[in-house]
Image 1 (cartoon, rainbow, N blue to C red):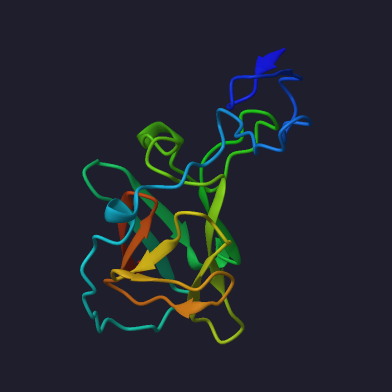
Image 2 (cartoon, helix red, strand yellow; image 1 turned 180 degrees about the vertical axis):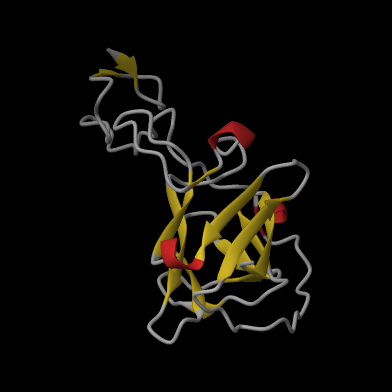
Amino acid sequence: MARCPCGRYDIDEKAKICPYCGELLLHPMATRALEEADADSEDVVPRWGTARFNSRMNLILNLRDSNMTYVFDANEVTELIIGRADPISGEHPPVDLTEFGAVEKGVSRRHAAIIRKDGGALHIVDKGTPNGTYLNGQRLIAHQPRILRDGDELRVGRLVMSVHFERNL
């Protein structure tokens, strides 16, 4: 049994809503909304890198304030999920930010996706997350793809990564 957030009722710990008062219950691993001051504090910075991404290139994501670099061959990129591990199912997304404090920094399990369209261009899509996805400081509209360019900066929750396209040798 668990205690309802209102403090008056003992309820089933697996419940999502208190059956007595209707209070929404957050799972301890649920993504929590960031404070408004934190969520929109990034400056919008225009970037003008190339959107050209072809089969002879690598997608490189560098996580700020760490030495972590994710490298994907163009042929591996159809849909890359950016997020964190799901402790219940054991699923890990290709860009797994769990070890970088993803839960505390507002990253959802399936936060965003990088999708390669038929023409070869890469697009970033927010998956409808409470803390949003930011491209060069501008919050994305959920489920609306935006073109990703070489030199762009992505922010998911409070984790920031730079995007680079590099030609395969």
